[in-house]
Image 1: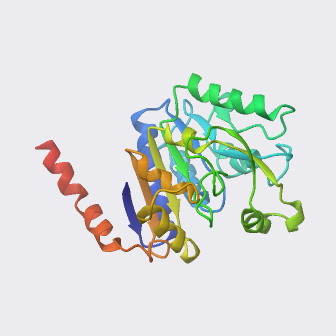
Image 2 (image 1 turned 90 degrees about the vertical axis):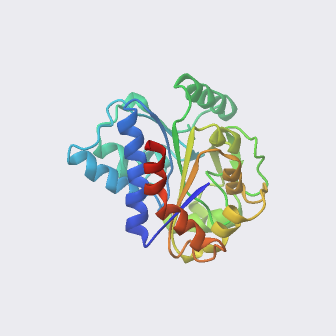
Length: 263
């Protein structure tokens, strides 16, 4: 796992955007896995800026989102379908037919989850999956106790997640209790993982998932099993890492490593 520590949220967002933009430039028809929540908004704004400057073309990109609330129509301003269009898709030239968000209003959720897995397979798998992390260490909506081999499925949200997400709704009782989410096993099949986190409130769980034991109680620890995982943090989120100085030193050596490989 590569850990990149940046000075603040803006720099974290730019570094994450660099990684995503590089993927698009290297493979214009790449498959991106995308995330919602407050953390990736800055990254999306940076990608939009580069697109508007003519530096980034989304016309062949295919996207799959991690999750969606059950019971919210796509027009609801707190649905993840709405979020993605408002924060990214409406501002870049991604083709509507290439956008995939889990169907939270499907009459048969189990069949819809199977369909979503099939669509990912048909697209050739996910090249780069963007992730955030919940306060209890979950990725997507894979709450504590989720199988590390899980697939796309219906998941009951924890009380902590409901309380965390209540800030986006008028009142806590409006937060859906269920979501459709990619499983941990689905996420681990992406060829590259990119997790971003910022703020002091994420410091403890960030240290646990990077430096602690692998456990289904903190599903983000599954990234330790992936051969190509990158974590981008700001200083506050990295503040409780025991090996913080080492991660910074390793990142500083990257140009030298690149030169050595070329030689």
